[in-house]
Picture 1 (tube, rainbow, N blue to C red):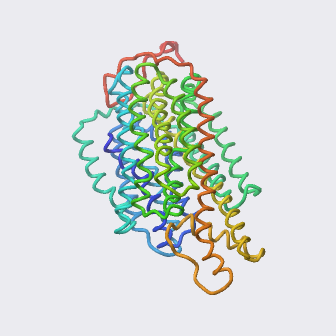
Picture 2 (picture 1 turned 180 degrees about the vertical axis):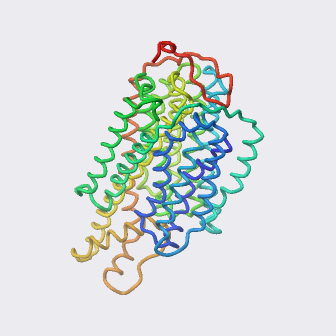
Picture 3 (picture 1 turned 90 degrees about the horizontal axis):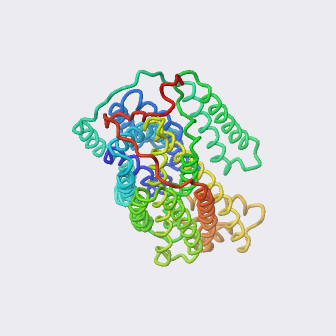
Amino acid sequence: MMFAVAMTFIDQTIVSIAAPDIVSELGLSSTGMQWVINAYLLSLAAFFALGGRLADLWGPRRVVVAGTLIFVISSVLCGCVPSGDWALTWLIIFRATQGMGAALLFPAALAVVVAVFPVARRGRALALFFGVTGALTAIGPLLGGWLTAWTWRSIFWVNVPVAIVALILTVLAHIPDRRRAETLDVKGALLIVAGMGLSVLGFQQAAAWGWDSVATWACIVGGLAILYVFCRYELRAPGRPLVNLAVFRDRAFTVDALVLFFAMLAFVPVFFFASVYAQVSLSASPNQAALYLLYFFAGFALASQWGGRILDKRGARPALRIGCALGAVGFALWAGKLTDLSMHDQWPYVALAGAGIGFILAPASTDAVNRAIDASYGEVTGITQTVRNYAASVGLAVFGTMLTHTMTDNVEQTLRERGVAPDTERSVARQITETVTGNADARVPTGDGPVATATRDAMSAVRLDFAEANQWVFYGMAVVLAIGYFCALRHPGGRAPDVSPPEDAGRPSRAASPREGDGR
């Protein structure tokens, strides 16, 4: 199962490293490139709940195989994107179907792993699961840097041999595949996909439409309204709902979900912003940018194992508090060093930020599953992963908007100091922002005009402007982790009640509930 989900973790980071080359060859804007990345994350968030439910209805083995096939076919098509006007649309569509395949695959795979281990050993088991897959995420930037030197299209094609091996291992594992005789909540699935898609669209397009735009707030408020309708419908849905919202009555589960939400606002977006910062402000190559991100995962991998042991011995509350505190401090100190433009000076704070996230993810995810004993493992992992990936989509959109606006204001001030006319500085600043954010190469404007000359002279200052803009983003990540810390303080503590693992390790099953047998 770890090998099966390897592709989904690698793909969360590998595209960020290749982003400048993709933008350069296909002529995309920085906003368009963010949508290529965000389409994958949004699709993950939108379809995870459905993937968890399908794992219960169809059996985890079938869903793992189906998700793997959808993912790898979409990967091949992403690598075959044609140049021209359809390039952006093509990439967004098949990145979204990639996300759909991952959303089917991951909850089913995780449900199998959870069902194998009793509660007393589950913390270390899932710490290993998330630690190894997190290490695979770290391989993404390194692999991306190496493959991009050949062609950026290979970052998608590399999933083919991984998928083949994953399918072979899935067959060899002989996973039992028992299905449930229940119906799928189609209306609930449509509502959650529409609500998440519309709300994240509003956050993402705020950079282009502006926060004072009616369209921006129509999307955000409209999407949240649909999600509210979804929640109301699920509470009254006939038969088995897509998401059993009753699990949120457990305070520990709710706190786990909130901490995961705030942690993921920073976790996935940091890959995109840190890799582009390294290439723009530090003038690093894609491979050097990948090594820069490895500092983060060095802290993440060590803390993930430690957090799993804390969960097994003392429960989730200590790990969550330590993780949020370390993460907030780490991101804040990291932000303060960005304008020094020295990779060597930053690595301790990069590793500290990674350690904070490592203490959070596995313990919070595992404790949430352990607490929700009245729901199937597939369903609960679908809920927690929906929360995680929706937060990642929102984080990328909000922080991307923050970066774009701050960078444009900084560059505008830089051009003003170099004598660019006020009536042109805003438009030129926007062009530079899109170019620098999307392309981390050393190209400078050509021509003998005053604007081109001033821009060439300002390139070193623009690199510092970009670092200053990223400071606001990283301080924002520190703030959201600080909010996560205050949420962690509300965790009731203790360990979840120990329940015997299901007889059929391949089938997520409901644990006995005191309410069973009373007709409800």
